[in-house]
Image (cartoon, rainbow, N blue to C red):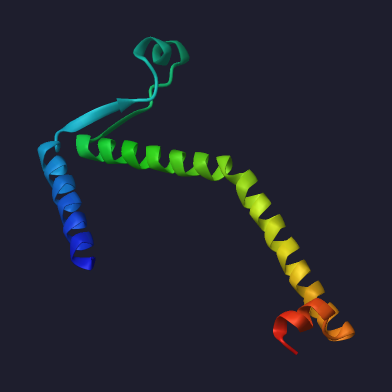
Length: 113
């Protein structure tokens, strides 16, 4: 299984290297359209290689997706925490009941004592 995993990541790395080598030319990124930049008098411009822009876009998309899922699953995580607390409380209560009252008649029958 490790061999398959390493082969998969090797193929992914090779693809990323090929995309990077094929897209090395500089690309100009503008934060605003030209007319709006002229109107406001601000023109933030960055020049980066195209593969950096692509990788940053994919990475930002992944981060936004992970964060969105984390927020979406909040209710399930909160419910699981409540259930775990209830389960632990019930286990403590059963243990305490067994210690203080001894064995219950039904439990004694089931245990064969």
